[in-house]
Structure formats: C-alpha cells, structure tokens
Length: 487
Ligand SMILES: [Zn+2]
Image (tube, rainbow, N blue to C red):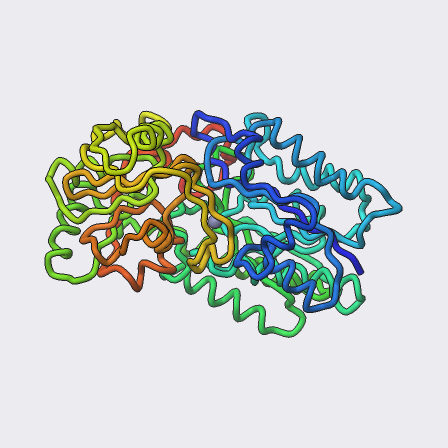
C-alpha cells in the first residue's frame, strides 16, 4: 500500500486588509521526500501521518506541504498554485497512490471564495473519482461546510486547544484510512452544526463548559462501533457562510450511530451557548495592567497579559500602556514589524536605536510605539521548535531583533508568528522567568506552557480584529441561526 501526503493550511481572518501571498506559503513549503525527512517525529499533522504509516508498513509519497500563520485572505494565485500542484501528484492513473492523507485547516478563505477547502476537495475528486480514499486532518477551529463531508472518507479534527495533539490527529486519520483500505473498518460519517461560533479566546478545551463537551466526545469514542469523534469550535473572524462550530462523528458502517453521536454533541453545545461565552475572564487594558502589576509584586513568577484580539502579532495596546507607566521587567515576545527589524539590523548589535514598532497591519492594531535603547540581537533567526506544539517543526522568523527600551524587552520578527512556548526567550539567550510581565497574543496555544510557567493569566480585550465581542465586527455573509451573530 502506498499513500500520498499533502498539506495546504491557513486560518484566514477575512477582515484583515492584506492578502496572504503565494510567496508567504512557499516560505513554509516542503516537497516530495523532504516532507517526510522534515516532519518525521514532529508534533505536526504530517508527523502523525508519517508515524502511523511507518508503524503500519505503508509506503508514503510526499507531494507538497505548506502552512502559513493566521493572516488575511489567501490570494487566488496561492490557492490555484497549491491546488494544481497537489492535484498534479494524483493525476496519472498509472502512478496514482492508493489514497491521500491531506492536512487542511478548515477555516481558509480567499478573496473570492468563502469556502475554498470544499472547492479544493471537489477539484481533487473531479480528478481522482468518487472511490479514491481521502483522509483529512483538520484544525479544531475549522468552519466546516456540510458539503465537505461527502468529499472525504475520513475527517479528524484536533481534540485539544492548545493544539497539543496535531500529530495524534494525523495518526488517527491515517490509521482509519489504512483500516478502510485493508477492509478492516468501514468509516461512515455524520456532521451537525449546532448554530454557534466561539471567539478563539473561549476555545480553550481545558476550561468548562467546553471541557465537559470534549469529555462527552471522548466517552462516545469508547462505545462499540464509534471510530472517531471531532468537535470543531469554528473560527469567528471569518465572514463566511460556513462559519460556526460543527461535530463530525465517524462510525463503523453504522450511519444511524454516527448521526446519534453528532446529534447528541451538537445539542450539548447548543444548550451551553451562553455559558461558553466566558466574558467573566475579560478585562480592559488599564485594568489588566493594574492586575498584572499587583500580582507580579506578590509573585516570583511572571504574570501573562494576553492581548488576545490581535490577529497579526503586531498590536500595541498593552505595550503602550506598559511604556506609559514606565513598567520594568516587561517582555513582549514576537512583535511583528519587518521595518523596525530592518532598522535594528542596519544599526547593529550594541547600538542605541530609537524606532517605532508595531501597529502595522491595520488601524485596529493601535499606533506604533517608540522604543529607545540598545539592540541586543539583530539578524536572521531559524530554529527547530522545542515547545509542545511546535516540537520538531522548523521555525523561520526571517530577520529578528531584540531591543531593550527602558525596562521593556521587545523581540521583533520579520515573519509573523505567535509566541506560544519558551522558544521566543531561549532562542535569544533570554529566560522568561527574569520578567515580571510577559505580553502574549496567542489565544489558547500558550496555555500548554504558560499555565504552569506563569503566576496567572490575565486577558485584556483590545479593539483589534479578533475581539471576544463579535458584535463589533462587520459580518455580511453569516447565515441566520449562528449564535451570537445572527441568532
Ligand atoms: Zn486552531
């Protein structure tokens, strides 16, 4: 048996003004045998595909695999290129593999397409026909369309946010497809949309009441005949007609059972729709900084302030407040600003610079903040991730810079990436425990490291493109019945 492996993943914030280009995807792309050599043993979905196939003695052919950080609409050129390249690997019937393992996000959008992933699968189906086995590994934040279901044989989503089980999800999908090909299982699927979408900040799967829904999904998986269950929370920052949570149940030849599981979980989510909005966790920026200062004074561990509404890793609302108050021992890891990095690189390590940083992606990100102080690091930074989510995955920040400005240490990047583990510190010779306050922009992924490392996590609501209050966003394409936007 021989399976093909491919990936084309992006979580698209449709409200952002700048397109995500083919060049940005190509920066992350791996091709052919290089996919297997790069991702073997990693925590990525590809790592799980590879592990399951090697364990089962299944041969693998790498096609093309790329995954960009969340950002604005994917360009049509990028979409066409990746579709053509991946489809091209399946076109020749004489050389066609026995099946495809595909990683998509589930919440991609292009400037012209609200649901490009269903179109992507349909285009693959048009090439390979209805009987060619395809397994999908998707992100928990996918906005799945019911039209996707009949185009795949197996759909598996991450069980956790933070996504500490991306490799296990790839392995689940691969094992189910291999079992189907061997005639050992007959996966049939059901999907339900419970009529809700959750802001990313409320999708931490360890927090109730979402944790209770996830526990019920795991219970269902222990029942005879249930092969796999995925709960997708949806992605709120996409103005698309397929927006919203979904449940996918996979049963062994028993469509009634799959329907029963999906119905049960969809009802549990719908019943909890108000409780799932944990507004009690949110503070204004001044109150968040007040709380952080108070708790940091009593603790020998850092306090995290989460600027969760930032979708481009460049918002400045919390940084400005910290600078205005003259706070010391503050770290702002992975603030995206290619121009500021360039000026630091031009100035050189040890030089004092005065440079405005952040607030580049849109007006909602806040104005740039002036940093004045020595450049501690400037130059290219590439490394292999060591944290639980990026374990074994190549990370390329482009050029990066570290600037110390009156007690605030800002780690600037040219490629935008969220700080979710300790790599933003240790890769630059810094220690997160040396800081009182750490300003992060991750929604849930940071929790895999910072729930233990930090004294506490304080969530600040800022006026950026990823707010908890969805009433502030200009949705136009959301259908009726999606709480809290249209229901
Ligand atoms: Zn996600």
